[in-house]
Image 1: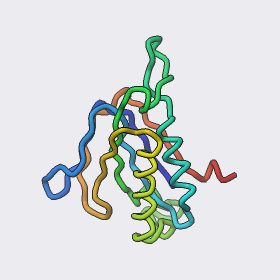
Image 2: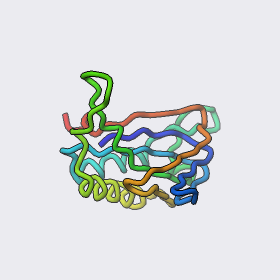
Image 3: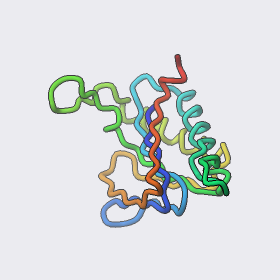
Image 4: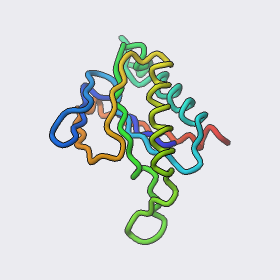
Length: 151
């Protein structure tokens, strides 16, 4: 699984002009599910997301997690993170998981965030055209790929 984690002051996702998810301070996480991803990938990614220390402490050092600040997470499915761009100019998405499996692992990731202590997890709508707005804080953006924990 792949995740783009952005530290935000607030974030929101709209579908058809209506808000479907909104958070205050915390993380906006864009989540892509690859064809060989497993339940364990979702669990690892959720645990790593919840414990990621990118909020500053009293010494202005990144040493606090979303748990430490009682922050929130807005998780948005984004299959385009799975794009293969090695050839040509048009991305290929053949390595992304089938929609049913991708949705299942995305939902598992979100429920695992809650199980790891994140107090509020909001979501986009899987497969929908979404408009995402955010106020990036820093900016601070971290890329995760569960492939690194499989090796």
